[in-house]
Image (tube, rainbow, N blue to C red; front, side, top):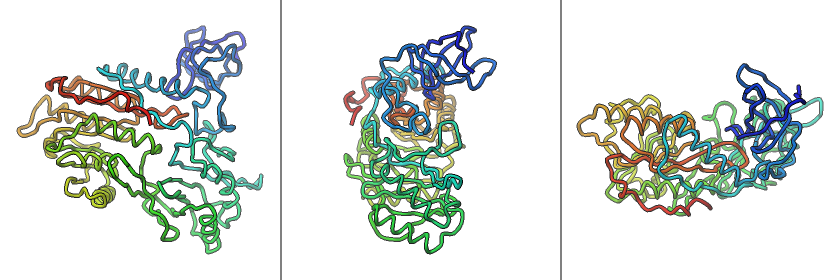
Length: 462
């Protein structure tokens, strides 16, 4: 329904890129396709006691930050939500979201607001999960992201945020799947782009016949891609054929090459990841005589660069299989002597377990969206009841993909664990989306502020 009697003034953007306004009754209204400063009329889709949600159908004036979306599928495809907002304003919005979360959820204000880390605004997405749907009634196959707020697959023939080679491959992929015998049993293609090759992981619910395998091989040769097959869970992923380039990304500043499997977690935006690793290590400021712990180490994205600077790095991760592969990556890069990797459920760590890992001069924490509450709580418990032989780290560099859980953990570190938030800033890992990543630095309050390293603010852009 449209309330034509009222124009709403948009006050801000929320973390889902919806405009936020209040109606005459004082109720909060969340509005798709509305930007701060605009006056809009709204078609309401959902009504609750304290809020409403809808989409803008009329605008009386446009925000000066509004731009024409570059992608013809914007508004239908759910992959991007901010293409109508200038990229500089996107970054400012994410920075403000981080600062608001730190204060309102954690009661923490960073002593220094870092310049946001930015990179390419387009063609940056080196990981993607594309849905596949055979639409028999239309005699076609759809390959792409889901429609916004829908389980339907968007009818896409291009994408502006993935590499151009992949965008040009969307229509040929549709034609390939349509030609396959198992077209109704192929729900997903996962994409991983390395330095030398694009890998496509085909999820198939039934075994592929010889003819379908040959179709995949011919497509791979024609388009220069590497096919992997996934008959069940992620652990079943395997190459269709051996040979060809290795799937890997590099961190040139540190002389490191990181092989990975296409279903591994790696950063979506390789250019921003390079800057993020460099910025994080400059703040960590590891020395040759120092021991560092890297919590949630993954394949070693931070562990291996730290090992080029520190005496010893302990990388801890939840999966034993992932730990083995991180260990192999360290050996490949000549860093086995300075690294140690262990498996542990980091969501169940307590004070005793934390102390058992031993003292470290510095920590790096890079958790999933759930954050690192158990680690922060254990550190707070050790601050309240110190254990002999354990000394808390002088500095913690926390890389976050969720400002809410960062703010929660920051509140524990600052108010209960004896730290101050020395610096924090946004990381625009996902331009054109509302996703907010960030970097925060915590120093023990008993460490003089003058001991912090000199870090240039200019390292924020690629």
